[in-house]
Every structure is written in structure tokens, then in C-alpha cells.
Length: 220
Image 1: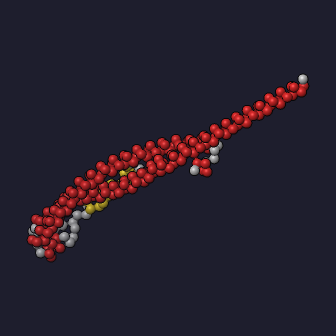
Image 2: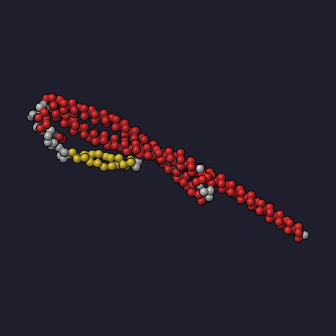
């Protein structure tokens, strides 16, 4: 393959040697990047599993409290109590760069700082189970946002790991071997040409010496 794609010249040999140095350096850097991405990815996956269990427990508790509240209250009172929210939540999103991957960072602000503003109803005609359900959802909100942040980060990092892995494999199994093969081919051709040139020079030298010897014999 090298013989049909590479021109056996010293300029091409120099270019391929420079390309090989760059490819080897890039391969090493990409392997380091891949390994570090894998380390951080596994850390996020572990954190995701633990946080997911916590969020699922919080949602389960909230659902259980809502079921109890619905059982102890009329549906009309329950609908009226939850019809008009008192508190408002404003989602904030930013990004941070981790190993050239822009992963999201989620946060939130509330309209007021009063923690009791999550209750949009009076306590006279509602049950304590409804209070527990609303409080459970309020408590689980930060963990839900963190879980969404981690899971999106895992998706982005997994895609970057796969892309980096393909680049590492391309360098390791295609570009570097082909470049080394090209260098070997050019080196072999240049050595062969040099030997051929030396042989021709030796023949020319012998012919010159022979002609010189005949000339001296004729002169004598």
C-alpha cells in the first residue's frame, strides 16, 4: 500500500517523520483524555445511582402523602387547595467545561425566600398529609435538578468517550502504522537508490581508469 501512495523522496520522508511524531503525541494525549473521562464518568454514574434512589424515595413519599390526603379530604377541597400556586421557581442553567465537554449546571431561584410560601392554601380545611406531600415535593426538587444535571452530563461524557475512543483507535491501528510503513518504504527506496548510484559511480570510475590506462599505453 505504501508503494502506491507514497512518493519516495527525502522531502516526503521528512514530512512523514513529522507526521509520525505528531500522531504519536496526539495518541498519547487522547489516551490520557479517554482514561480521565472514563474515571469521571464512572464517578458520575455512581453518584447518579445513589441520587436516583434518594429522588425515587422522595417522590414515593410525596405520592403516598397525596393518596392519604385524597382519602381524608373531598376532591373539591383538594383541587381548590392546589389550584393557585403561591410560590414560583425559576430555573437557572449554566455550563462548565470538563475535559473539553460542556456539561450543564442547573440551579433555581424562588420568588420569595419564605419556606412557608410553598403552601398555597390555609390549614383550616386541609389535612396534614397534604402538607407532608407538598413539603416532600419541595424537599426533593434540588435533588431532582441535580439528578437531571448528572444524567445529562453522563450522556455528554459517554458520547465524548466514544468519539475519543474512535480517534485513539484510528491513530493506533491506521494512521501510525501507515505512516511507519511509508517511512520504511521510502527509507528502503532511498537506500536502494543510493546503492545503485554507488554502483554506477564505481563502474564509471572503472571505465575512466581503463580509458586512462589505454591512453597511456598508446602514448608509450
